[in-house]
Image (spheres, rainbow, N blue to C red):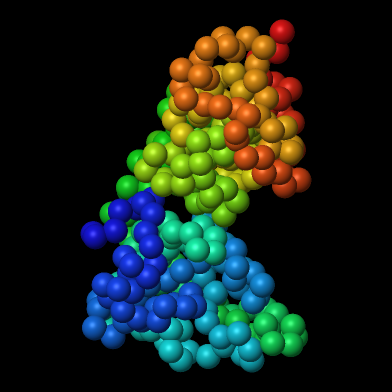
Length: 289
């Protein structure tokens, strides 16, 4: 595949300049390409598009800002992609004028209609929602990228022996997909390329009260490996405001040796659900005197 899962791409330069297709909107259908390009992002919520992920797959809202959505244009292209020999490639927007993150190749599993607000009048209309699932080869790549070593270690604990390795890998992949809906990159290094990040649990896997906490995107951060180590071992944590907390036990030269300048880190507040998990981390994981 020409696109690598987790990597960042410029929509105009890397996609449309090469394959053409519509340069705006969430569905691009270049006529002379085997690909259909799908784009998801936070901006869609303003138009009633609330894409989300769960155990059934990635749920992508169709196109059409007013009136009931119909199976025309991009919606028809997704519905008929197998018949027409087209492949669905999904990208995540990281914000206006920022790159897109490649999430993988998907195939249509189901379609549904739901009530959603219309951009034009804010009245409810029928919206098409496509349930997409990653193709097997890409799902395996995502599962490999998602594995947390400490979770594998927890498999030896009595509380997790009922879960098979396959179940754990699947749940960790779902967890990472959920984290991506809340966190765009590492809060300390600024890295957004998933190939160099880990989806890290705030409240450890083995301490989660149920399966929902284990896959809850609010219970996760995207962290560079060395920052993940510091966070996992309680050398650092975060205030709800986004300010980094340093353990009093952290040797003073470690951060400077790692190239981390705490004073220059941009603070972004966490939402309420994230704050609840961070409270657990501060109280139970952060090393205090």
